[in-house]
Image 1 (cartoon, helix red, strand yellow):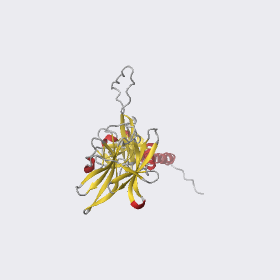
Image 2 (cartoon, rainbow, N blue to C red):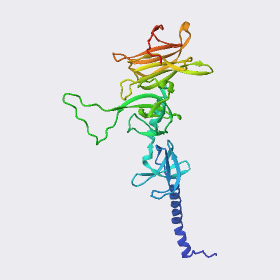
Image 3 (cartoon, one colour):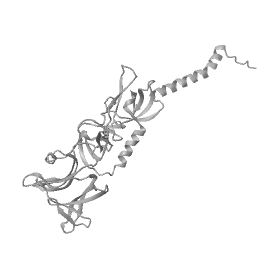
Length: 346
């Protein structure tokens, strides 16, 4: 009969500690995985031009990666004071300041803004005067995400005027007895679309409409609001565009988008632009429709349609056609009205 094997006290002790040791190793492994990967708290998007990722929250740190404007990151951890967050961007993980991020809700708002204006006619092309933020709403304190570089080309879609914020320390001028208090100072904003298709509101005074100097020089102190190519004419071996240009008062907050329309045609004999048509005192509203249309025996001609407010407050459309250097207003029956008289060809 075989004698039973009796384990020594040391072996029995190891057997008792083995489950605890295994559990400890599992917890250490999970902790290491969490520190490297981390549970994703939320998605966020970079609103600064470029931000370096840090390996630690300290005055001295190592750079472990870079995130750029509009890039999506995953938030893994927040510092105790809420100033810094640890994020994952692709294969990189590191700490960055919370103020350089916007939420998924803000990003979705910009996506909706771009998609809802995908079919909005372009009023003009413009260049930025400096680095600009694109805002979700036409306001300085509106949420911002995308940034434009100085000299960036954008498409202008829609104009809006909103009150300019007043510094809290600025004194408010008292109204004179019997007069109404001064209203808020308004400033113009443009809904702009950049090359990647992102759309956002940009401060109007920081934009310059992209139009040839040969045309812009005839603005006569007015602000060029929009311009459209009506057609092209031949001058020797080159094609020269002819323009419809909309202008307004050189100040923000006007109740109209433009109050003057001019058509510039090219004179090949003198090699310069001339005013073929001018109409003033318009309460014009964007958008403007430009294209071509058949006009009976005259053939297919360039035409444009302006939207103008009437004295009664309604909005009416006025159609015009360009035949050679003659611009005529087209009535509802399709017949052309008289040509406007223009003083000063240049």
